[in-house]
Image (cartoon, rainbow, N blue to C red; front, side):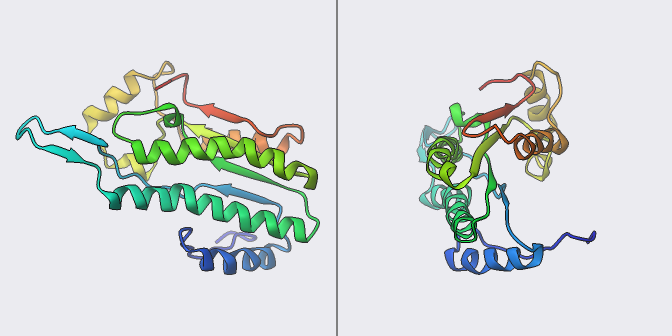
Length: 203
């Protein structure tokens, strides 16, 4: 790894794992003044629907609901709690960036994902108000369709349809999202807001 970069496996759905990770990260970096909540998965499917082939009523499984909420929402919430507690205890102002999604406004087949990402955007406002007295800023970035490992397995027809729905005519790149995150870290007067980075697309 490049100098100054440290890596450790972390299960964000495990509170004990987070509790041991945060002091480790602070020790490795000589302090802790920032968090990017970027862990996430998808388990898409209609909440309730009817099979066109069999007429059978289908439901999103409780397992798929619980897993997405555990990682995308509960994991992020627990990370914020532990990191901010460390910042306050050490008198260190900092920045929290939550990765939400334009899907937070509602997207067919993603009830679990939408619930998690909408909650993150809402709590960005809540935490902004709670943590500002400690000099801690909180903001969020909401990507649209972005070329990542999560989209790499999609079929070409689906990808073409997504690109056609984006005014800029292309999917986002990780660098596009990073520029928004970088802005949040660098702008000391920015807090409490969610930045959509979606090429002009809305769901």
